[in-house]
Amino acid sequence: MKGFLEIFIPFALIIVLLGVSFNKAPTTSQKPTDLSTQIPSFSEDDENLFETSFIIISVPENTPEDATIYMMGNFNNWLVGDENYRFEKMEDGTYQLVIKMPPNTEIFYNYNLGFSDYVEKDFYGNERDSRKYKFEYNRDVVRDEIESW
Image 1: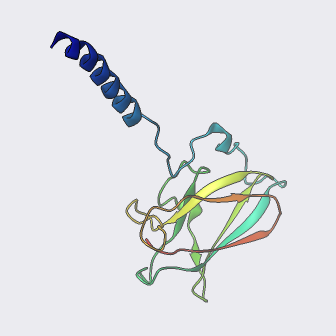
Image 2: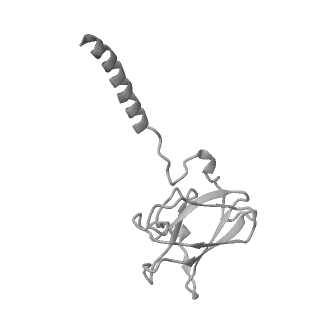
Image 3: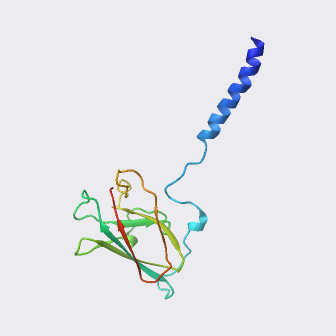
């Protein structure tokens, strides 16, 4: 019996430690946290900024007619319902927002309806990866579709 315990206890200890280390493995996050994705501070009055129009060309059928859509991302600390990044609904049913950033700034972003329960999802209702855009051209246009909330 003593020989069995001398083999079993170290083996069981290794299994337990491996299980704990697997549970503590970092999980991938939808929102990038790398410091390289932080946006440098700047003034919107800066004449050297690039301007990009973000246009949402379609929204899910269950989007309320009077919905307010916002953009959130690494540029506003992923703040849901940020009035500074509120889209304007156009007569053709699209939504438009113009953002100015320093040239070559890369942003990660998603859309929301002003509540954390209503952040865009993929077609099947699963969390979607953050969208990515780099301000490489002045007066660029980005057209996106929102698949579901």
